[in-house]
Figure 1 (cartoon, helix red, strand yellow):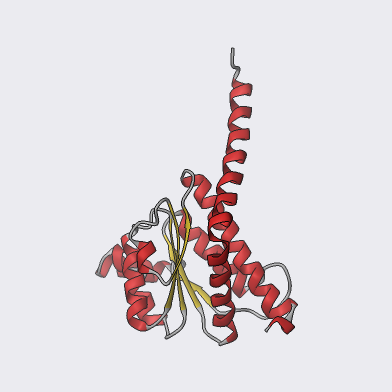
Figure 2: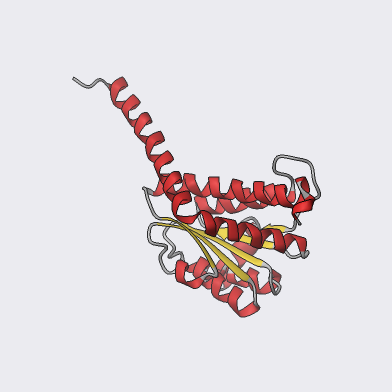
Length: 201
C-alpha cells in the first residue's frame, strides 16, 4: 500500500525528472536560437540601447527578475545595463487599464519608452496573452527588435516576433522553470562577452 510519504517522494522525483527533461529538450532543439538571442542582447547593450521586458503573472515576475539582473548585477560587479520592466509601475498599469483597457498596458509603454532597435522581450507561457501581443505590434511599429519567450506551441506570439524561444515540452510549471534558466543564461552570456572577455568583442 502506498503511504503518503511514498506518494510525496514519488511526486518529488517525478517533478525533478520532468524539469530536467524539459530543459534538455529545449537546449537540444533551440541551442542556436538561444545563441542568436544572446548576441542580439549583447549588441543591444553595446550600442547603448535598452531592453523592455513584460508578461503577466509569473511571467511578470520573470520580466522583473530579468531586468533586475541587468540594472543591478548578475554574478559579478560591472556597470549597470539599461533595461525596464513594463510590469513594475503600478500607477502606469492601473491608469492605462482604467482609462483604456488592460490589453493596452504594455503597448502604451512601448510607444512611450521604446526606441528603434531597442528590444521588446515578451514572456507568455501560452503565447496568447492579448496585452503581450498588442505590445509586440506596437514594438514592430516603432522599429524595436522583438523576442518572445513562450511555451506549448508558441501561440500567436511565436510567428509575430523576430526571435522566438519556445519551450514546447512539459506542463506549465516545468515550462516556466525552463524560462528562468533561459533568462539566467542570457544574463550570464551578456556578462561573459561584454565584461569578462572583452577580446570576444
